[in-house]
Length: 89
Image (tube, rainbow, N blue to C red):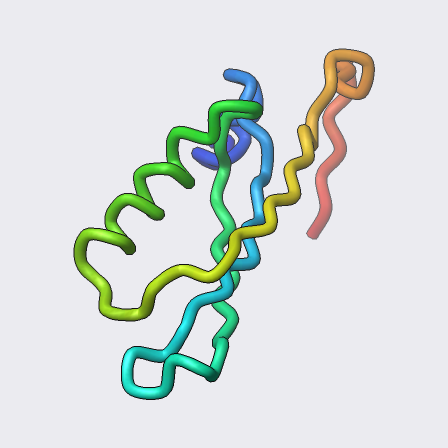
Protein backbone atom coordinates (compact mmCIF):
# COMPACT_ATOMS: atom_id res chain seq x y z
CA UNK A 1 0.00 0.00 0.00
CA UNK A 2 1.36 3.43 -0.95
CA UNK A 3 1.86 6.11 1.69
CA UNK A 4 -0.46 9.07 2.08
CA UNK A 5 2.42 11.36 1.02
CA UNK A 6 2.71 9.50 -2.27
CA UNK A 7 -1.03 9.89 -2.90
CA UNK A 8 -0.77 13.62 -2.20
CA UNK A 9 2.10 13.94 -4.67
CA UNK A 10 -0.01 12.27 -7.36
CA UNK A 11 -2.66 14.95 -6.69
CA UNK A 12 -0.15 17.75 -7.33
CA UNK A 13 1.14 18.37 -3.82
CA UNK A 14 4.84 18.90 -3.29
CA UNK A 15 7.09 18.90 -0.26
CA UNK A 16 7.10 22.36 1.30
CA UNK A 17 9.56 23.52 3.93
CA UNK A 18 9.15 26.81 5.76
CA UNK A 19 11.80 28.41 7.96
CA UNK A 20 9.75 30.49 10.40
CA UNK A 21 11.58 33.16 12.39
CA UNK A 22 9.73 34.53 15.39
CA UNK A 23 10.44 36.69 18.41
CA UNK A 24 10.41 35.28 21.93
CA UNK A 25 7.49 36.75 23.91
CA UNK A 26 9.57 37.56 27.02
CA UNK A 27 12.68 38.67 25.10
CA UNK A 28 11.52 40.38 21.87
CA UNK A 29 15.08 41.16 20.73
CA UNK A 30 15.83 37.42 20.47
CA UNK A 31 14.73 35.66 17.29
CA UNK A 32 14.07 31.92 17.31
CA UNK A 33 13.76 29.56 14.32
CA UNK A 34 11.09 26.90 13.70
CA UNK A 35 11.15 24.53 10.70
CA UNK A 36 7.75 23.43 9.33
CA UNK A 37 7.51 20.73 6.64
CA UNK A 38 4.40 19.28 4.98
CA UNK A 39 2.99 18.44 1.56
CA UNK A 40 1.33 21.53 0.14
CA UNK A 41 0.10 23.06 -3.12
CA UNK A 42 2.24 25.66 -4.90
CA UNK A 43 1.73 28.70 -5.19
CA UNK A 44 -1.23 29.16 -2.80
CA UNK A 45 0.19 27.02 0.06
CA UNK A 46 -3.14 26.41 1.84
CA UNK A 47 -1.64 24.11 4.51
CA UNK A 48 1.11 26.60 5.37
CA UNK A 49 -1.42 29.44 5.50
CA UNK A 50 -3.60 27.42 7.90
CA UNK A 51 -0.58 26.77 10.12
CA UNK A 52 0.49 30.43 10.10
CA UNK A 53 -3.10 31.54 10.86
CA UNK A 54 -3.11 29.14 13.83
CA UNK A 55 0.28 30.52 14.94
CA UNK A 56 -0.85 34.15 14.85
CA UNK A 57 -4.17 33.33 16.54
CA UNK A 58 -2.93 30.95 19.28
CA UNK A 59 0.79 31.41 20.00
CA UNK A 60 2.52 34.26 21.81
CA UNK A 61 5.69 34.52 19.71
CA UNK A 62 5.11 37.16 16.99
CA UNK A 63 6.32 36.21 13.52
CA UNK A 64 9.39 37.95 12.16
CA UNK A 65 9.67 36.31 8.71
CA UNK A 66 8.87 33.13 6.79
CA UNK A 67 11.08 31.65 4.05
CA UNK A 68 9.47 28.95 1.90
CA UNK A 69 11.05 26.24 -0.26
CA UNK A 70 8.90 23.92 -2.40
CA UNK A 71 9.66 20.90 -4.54
CA UNK A 72 7.42 18.71 -6.66
CA UNK A 73 9.05 15.38 -5.92
CA UNK A 74 7.20 13.40 -8.57
CA UNK A 75 6.95 14.72 -12.09
CA UNK A 76 5.06 12.98 -14.90
CA UNK A 77 8.28 12.10 -16.76
CA UNK A 78 9.76 10.49 -13.66
CA UNK A 79 6.92 8.06 -12.93
CA UNK A 80 7.29 4.89 -14.95
CA UNK A 81 5.25 1.74 -14.57
CA UNK A 82 7.16 -1.52 -14.61
CA UNK A 83 5.88 -4.89 -15.71
CA UNK A 84 8.25 -6.75 -13.37
CA UNK A 85 8.16 -7.49 -9.68
CA UNK A 86 11.29 -7.82 -7.62
CA UNK A 87 11.30 -9.42 -4.19
CA UNK A 88 13.84 -8.47 -1.57
CA UNK A 89 14.29 -10.59 1.53
